[in-house]
Length: 130
Image (cartoon, rainbow, N blue to C red; front, side):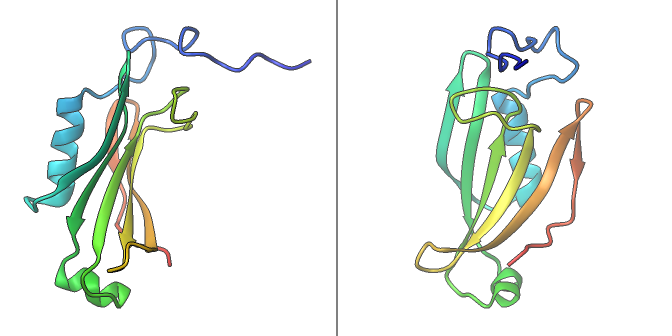
């Protein structure tokens, strides 16, 4: 027998569920912490009735990152994705990933930088996979 997939209506609200959905201000604070004062621009931000479910920000890569990925003039993108069913899919975790893009906008590596677990952000070393 097949179970009906969860819908937004059947998903616990932030008050009911074990995991709190971060507010826009909390997500921005998290980006600011990850970027350590570097300037960034919003690429895309999508919301539904429960808040932000996808937020992409972009920044220029540092000299150190350019050497690591053998690419000058590239960018680095951080992507926040909220757990649960929404118009952007049904991610199993609330997390932030990063990706490097070359000067022509092609992805050249990336990885996971943090994950929300039991209401707290868990950080990973930003070791890109290529």
